[in-house]
Length: 143
Image (cartoon, rainbow, N blue to C red; front, side, top):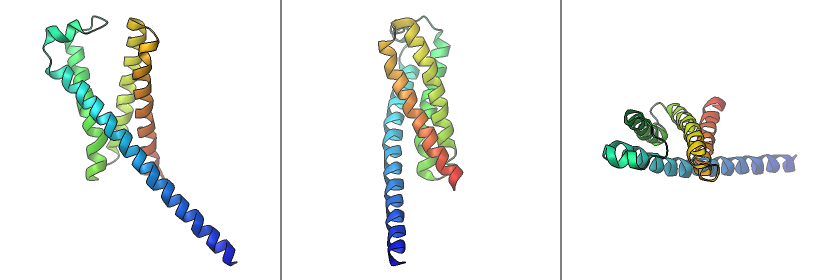
C-alpha cells in the first residue's frame, strides 16, 4: 500500500513538472511571436508607402498592407497582455488563432510570389501560433 502512495506522489510531482515546463515553453514561444509580430506590424504601419510598396513581392493595395500591420500589432499584444495580466486570458488563444490564420494567407502569397522554400518561414510561424492557441486553449477547457 505504501508503494502505491509513493508512486502516486511521484506521478503528481512529474505532472507538476510537466505543467511548469509546458507553461515556460508557451511563454517563450508567445514572447518570440509577440516580438516578431510587433516588429513586422509596426514596420507595415510606420514605413512610408513608397518604401513599403518597393518591398512587396506581389502588388497589393497599401490599405491592405496597413490593415495587416494593425492585425499583427494587435495580435502581438493579444498574445501577451491577457495572459500576463490575467484579465480575460481566453483572448490569448484567440489572438494566436487569428495570427495563425494570417500566416496561412502569408504562406499562400509567398508560395505564389516567391516559391516554396521562402514560404517555410511563415509556415513555421503559423505552426507556432497554432501551438500557442492549442496550448493556452486546452488549459482553459480542462480547468
